[in-house]
Image (cartoon, rainbow, N blue to C red; front, side, top):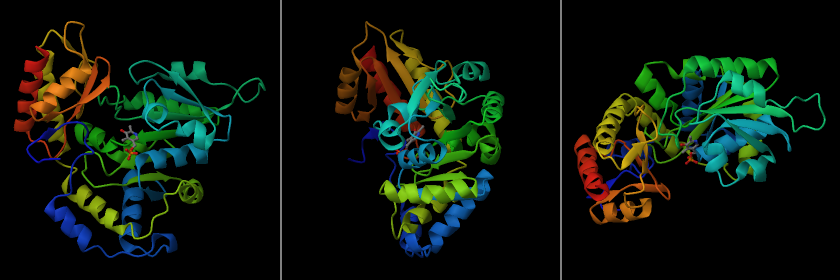
Length: 345
Ligand SMILES: *Cc1c(COP(=O)(O)O)cnc(C)c1O
């Protein structure tokens, strides 16, 4: 991709800065499968401590870490409760069914659901006509619903209700860093009510790859075998760990700038009567918006924006997504807002 493009397709498009590359180049590495990679060992310990969990395990992708979570918490034919439009049900290529053999029950609207919604959806183990509910997954921030932040007290109530029914709770926290940066709540507090949590280093933090699954020692030990089975057992992955540590040290504190840039872009788009933002308030770095019937459709807007140097995603026939990140300055976002507003009208 040429550097003069303003690329707001995702916060995964960032490229390692010279300083991050230097940290990677100088990383001390070893064979992860033998436990010999000092950079990886250090990162996993640091993430476990940050998240307040016993142990953490690195995966090449967040999808694979989520899949391993499904595998450690469920058995084939179990039922997994998720919010509407969650990543695990929409963006993991059917992995829940193919890898874990589970079925999803989707509840709530706009990515959120209440403890009461959850209680109504639980399928009890005691009745053998049911697929037993053994896991609930919450996504914070919520990707397809415009980067929204979960109310922490409701998430905690859901986890308590889950545990009362011997149901495990997993947090898809690919962008948990954004929640922490925005609310000031430590990630350990956000992850506290959950058994396991996944965090991505490759989104807003800007590392070139890698996500971690953290939780109780026995579950993470089981996840090691699932990672192997899913093909994610890499060797000198300490190069990625070094990038992740660099990202934690240097790119966490600035995430709020991305949120402010997203709000600026959101304000510019909301000024058009042909745009409807899916969230009333831009909570973090993702904007999802609908194009009303009198606007061009999403693919047309995407193509025309590209011709003018701005990349955004068509997320549906009349739905679009733009994501701010460390390689797009506030001025870039302002320029993207002008271009999109002109095209949409
Ligand atoms: C990106 C993302 C993932 C998966 O991460 P990959 O590294 O792209 O596989 C999982 N959950 C959410 C909410 C995400 O946004």
